Length: 126
Image (tube, rainbow, N blue to C red; front, side, top):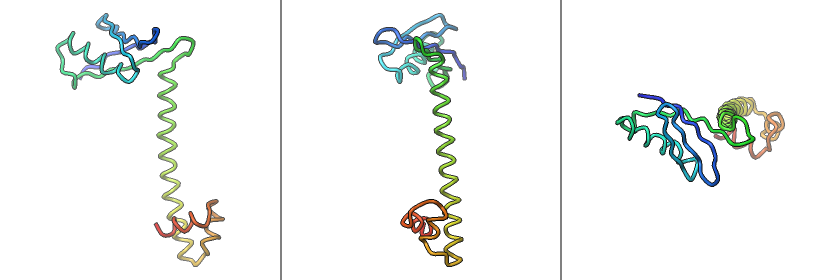
């Protein structure tokens, strides 16, 4: 599988999609189309199958340095936050059940976990 660097910039209403390794350029109306457009150009120029082409997208917007890298960092932080949320939920359920097994009232479990007693009940019974 081949990986090609793709530089994407905004020009008017279009995203310009440059493939420096092939000295080629295409354009896309929407950013979401840029990767496919690049892969199609690469496939046409190299004869490779679309499934065998990977692109390393670098997105730059005037006056906003490293927009693509910053956006990827945000996506990674969201994935990490989701992972931590799932971990906290699992730990909350486990503790709520352990407390309930010790006959701790649901209202007190909610207070301890910092949630409503209704949510504490859901955690105990889930």
